[in-house]
Image 1 (cartoon, rainbow over the protein chains, first blue to last red):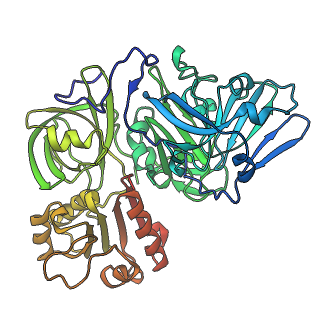
Image 2: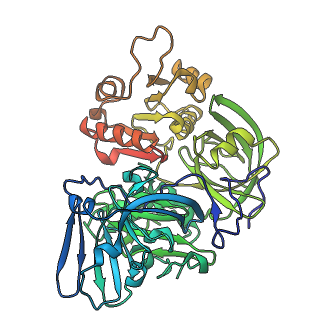
Image 3: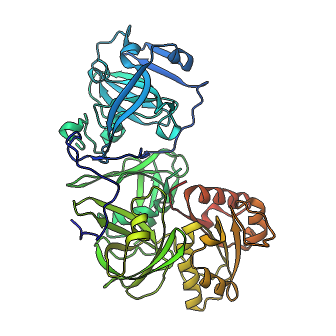
Length: 197
Length: 84
Length: 244
């Protein structure tokens, strides 16, 4: 540990029993990224779910907008230690998208425009736990925060909520995505502080 | 637009290498480009770094700082040439 | 070009003095026992530790280029920054700072270089270019130096007095004001453009070494224009500060 810097406290941080271990509360919404921000027009946007038999289910932006939309009020936790409580989103539940999908596989890989990937067990996408979110705080989701649409999986560390999501591929096993291959935890439960592998 | 140049790698890589790695040349596995690491594009995610080829944007290297260790993924670099 | 000495050890420096440069910026003199000097253009990593153990590390370009144990930094306060507000508003002489460096052998000018040099800085991007200008003056180098310095308003100029002294002696300086100009200024406020670069920088056919430093957006715009104007990409070295 370094010498204490007189008068330095960093971003406003509170230890708060509502927060997972090691997290600090923030009022900001930091932008962290592994690469350049893709610019995707909703005219060209497409979301797919691909199953093990090669079937590809597709939704255009219009298709997505025609589905039931949910208001989501939730807390989000980033592996870099900031947490944001009571964030509000609007999106389509993965339960809605997976209704009518036939698969025997239990794992998924989310793919994003720009090449980012992250793996999520199917059970963590279903049961009211995950959305394709396109609005944050009452506004269309900003590209730097993952717009036009991102995955939203608040019960896991936020690197699992893939920005610029373009599709989900069914996987037989829990194959690691980008950060998982680079040292992050394969699952990422903030309450068990599963940051690294 | 908040990425920076590979110059910022000098400090973090000095924890592992005793030479200035920003002067090392890395060959991008994706496109074959050979440039000094100082010219790579670096995306900062907290204390974790993603180093991308300035020509094709493919990931060349990542650095992840955990409490116990420094993890360096080098699979995007075909060959590192370090001037001595 | 040989690689530099091991620099991964954190050294402790003591703030010797602070000086207000602009409404949001400050220069800071730090005494670092064992520093041993640095080349013009190098940077250091600075580490702050809060009482609860939280740490923040940031890279800062060094404004000085001497062989001694004193370094000068210049910092601009970012609106949503975590470290810069502390350095600009809180830090006092006598405070200790942890520093790692000097770092980086790429974005460097050495007095042995004889080709013309074009420096292009945006805002606090002037810092490593200042080190180069100082090294140029101290070494008695006769290499031609030009500087293009882009700021929002005349109040946002770092090292104003020293730059004015350079302007009347060894360095041709072009000032670009993007939001507000000095009274009576012939050119309206505006960003660095292809035309400005054409008229105010050393042309490509004189084969200058070009150093561009500042916010990422500024550096990318300028670097792209320089290549359009015929400068080989290999001759243009950049130091992006992040931000917009």
